Length: 393
Image (cartoon, rainbow, N blue to C red; front, side, top):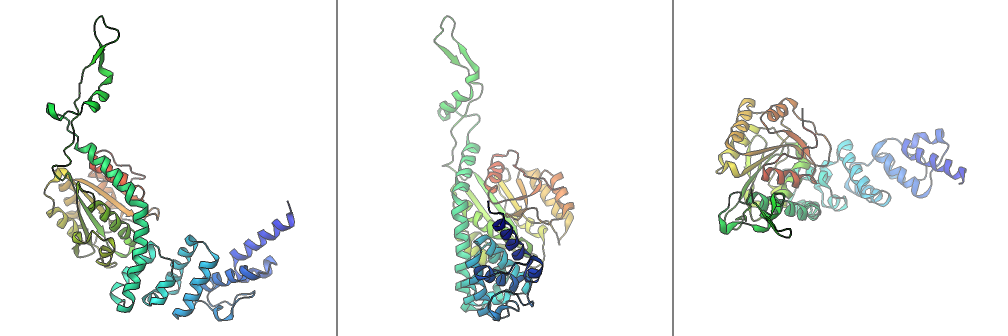
C-alpha cells in the first residue's frame, strides 16, 4: 500500500469536509472536479465567503437570489454528488437561504431532484403558485408519487389481501361452507388411530374453518385521518399514496380526510394521489377533535372499521373531547391506530402527554415507516397486536 497516497487522500477528504478556510491547515489544495465540488458546497454552507481554489467567481458569494444562478448550482451538485446527497443539499438550500420563492419559477422546478420534502414545500406554496408554474409542479409531484407507488403498492395490496382473506374466514361454518383442507391441517394434532388398524385413523376436528365470503360484501371500512399541519408534510405525501392503494382494494371501503383547523374530505379524489395532494393545504393550526368528530359521524359499522389517525398530536382544539372520542370509538369496537408520523424521518416531535393518554385507551401512538405500514394495517384488519417499533411514552 502506498502510504503517501493514503495520507493525501485523507487530507483531500478533510479539506472537502472542513471547507475553504481550512486550506492552510491541511496544506491540501483542490483542483479540477474537487475544486468545483468544493465551490458548490461553499456556495451553500459558507455563503459570503470567497472559496479558494479554481472555481467560477460568479458563485463565490453564495447562490444569489436569481433562478439562473440557482439552476446552475443545481446542475453542478447533480454532477458531483449522488441523488440522496443532492436531495439533502436542496433541502438545506431552501431552509438556509430562503429559496422557496424561486420554486415558483418553472425553470427552477425543472432543475431540481424531486423528493418527498420538495413535494411538501411545493404544496405549502400552492396558493402562491402562478398558473405558468402549476403544470411543472404537478409533473414534479407526479414523479415522486409514481416512484412511491412502484415501491409500495404491490406489497401493500398483497399484505392486505391476505389479511382480508384471513379475517373473512368463518369460525363456525355451516357444513357446505367448511374448508376441509384448512380444517384438516388445523386439526392434525387430534389424529386418532383406528383400533386394530396401524395404517388408518381419523382426525377429530375440534375447530372448523369455513370459506370466507369476500365476494358478498365489503369486509372492512378504513378511515385515514391525516394532519396537514406543516410539520406533517412527508406523512401527507405517503398517506395520499397509501390512500389510493387502499381505495383500489376491492374488499375495502376507504375514506380519506385531511385537517388543520378545518376538515376536508378528499375521498372522491382517491383514484389519483396527485389530486389528493393538491387538495391539501399544508400549514396552519391543528384541531384533532374536530377531525375525529367528523370521522366518527361517518362510521356505520364500528366492529368492521379501522380508523388511522396520522398526527403529531399537538392539539389546538378541545383536548378532553378529543380523548373522549377515541375512548368512545374504541368502546364501540373500532380498531383505532395512531401514527405520529408516516415517513422515513425517524422519531418525530410529538405531544407526549396526548400520546400517553391514547396509549392508556388501547390506541398506542408510534411513528411508522412506509415499509411497515402494510403490516400495521394487516394487523388492525385482523384485530391482532400491532407490530409497534417503539411505543410512545
